[in-house]
Image (cartoon, rainbow, N blue to C red; front, side, top):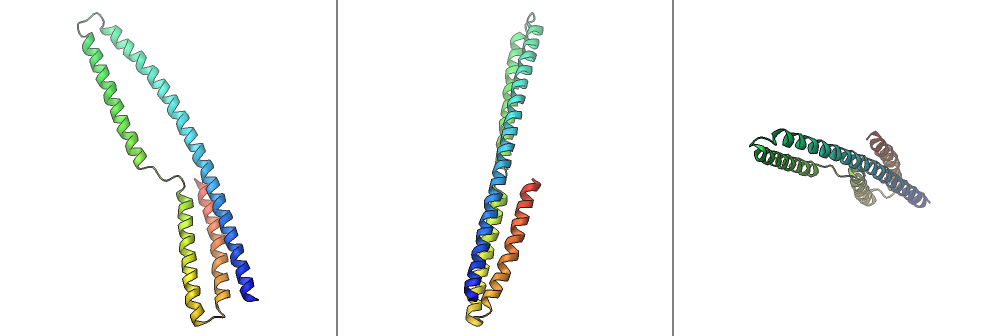
Length: 162
């Protein structure tokens, strides 16, 4: 009878744990989608206006130096300057992408903790079954319920804080 109750409590804890992890994954997915859309929109608007500004300034410089013998030098300097700025920005974007945090790091961390807790519980119950077979159900149920509820609360709170 105690074994059946312990098994149903364990199954309930596992179902609640899976539900919490799926909910955390969904929250992180929505946050990542919003962040990516916002980043793309801002980058596109910035690129359009920087391109317009660059075109106007280039035209102004060429018009100013058109009647002088330095007009080709000005065009060459502008081209080299634009190329250098583009290269620097490309390298910065590459370094930024290298240091980019994994999109679902909170879910992955929670799943790693869950695996660690379950492996510790299995090891403890295996060691406990050889020593005292009657103490196993109560220790397993007391370890499963507080951890799963505190994990789910902390996991969702961490995702909400971002």
